[in-house]
Every structure is written in C-alpha cells, then in structure tokens.
Image (cartoon, rainbow, N blue to C red; front, top):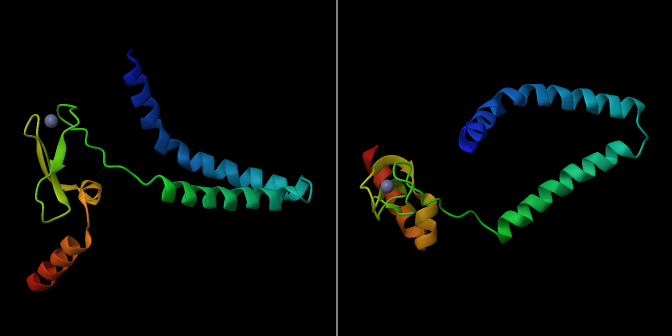
Length: 128
Ligand SMILES: [Zn+2]
C-alpha cells in the first residue's frame, strides 16, 4: 500500500474520531476537576485561551495563501475564472474549469477586493 493511501485512510477516519475524542475530553475534564490539584483547571483554561490567542497572532502574521494546485492535473496553475468575481477557477495547464469553487484567496493575492465585492453586492441587489 502506498503512503498516499495510508494517509487517505487516516484522514478518512478523522471524522469518526471527533465524537469519541469529545467524550474523552469531557471525562478527563471531570476527573481532573474532581481529583486533580486545584491549580490544574485554571492552568488548562489558561493554556486553552493562550493557544487561541497564539493562533490569532500566528494567523495575522502568516495569513493563508491560495492553493493553486489543480485537482485534475496537479499543476500549480489555477487562476480565477472571472476577474470580476471571487467565484470559479480554471487551470492554465489542462483547461480544468470549476465555476462553483471559491477563488477568494486567489483574488486576495492579486489585490484589492473591495471594489469587486461592492460590485457583486450591487449586482445581487439588482437581481432581487
Ligand atoms: Zn490542471
């Protein structure tokens, strides 16, 4: 079995592990609060809040980048389908087209989004 198949299987198991992991977290939290030292619950809460704050800082300092990988050919050549919207991508390599997928990150990398979003909002109001 190839490494990709093993990784795919592990990724497919992920959703099934969410509920048991949540239940285990509740059980461990109750056990810690009942039997653990008094400092452990505030420390855990502090770690949780600190982790969230760290996540926000990391996201602000290293924002998400657009994934330009084509789902059909794997080339790094996805482009926006229409320069006037943030929907739809096409591949310059194999001419793959998906009109429904979001191209927001691609548009964000290209420049200012505000004029485009305002134009989309105006056209949505007109179509109502
Ligand atoms: Zn392609």
